[in-house]
Image 1 (cartoon, one colour):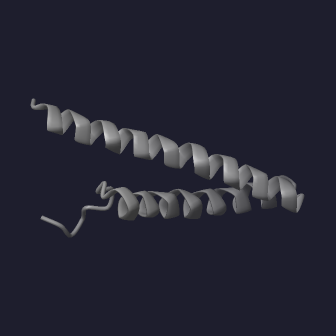
Image 2 (cartoon, helix red, strand yellow; image 1 turned 180 degrees about the vertical axis):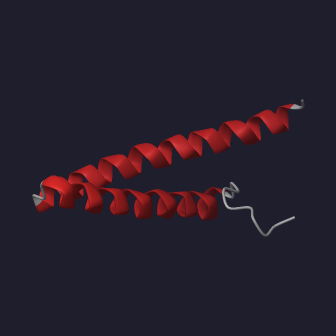
Length: 74
């Protein structure tokens, strides 16, 4: 296994972890600021987290050139 492959996987995992942390923090801040409670809080938090997570991954992909969504590229 050559070093470029390890570096590529390391950047991939760091990008995923950063996206998780940022999306979780932002969704919690927004839901808390809105003052939602109960099952509405759960649903809004889940949808907001998903949107933020994939949005952040897409932004990291565009800014740093790391391929997360490599479905159509060969």
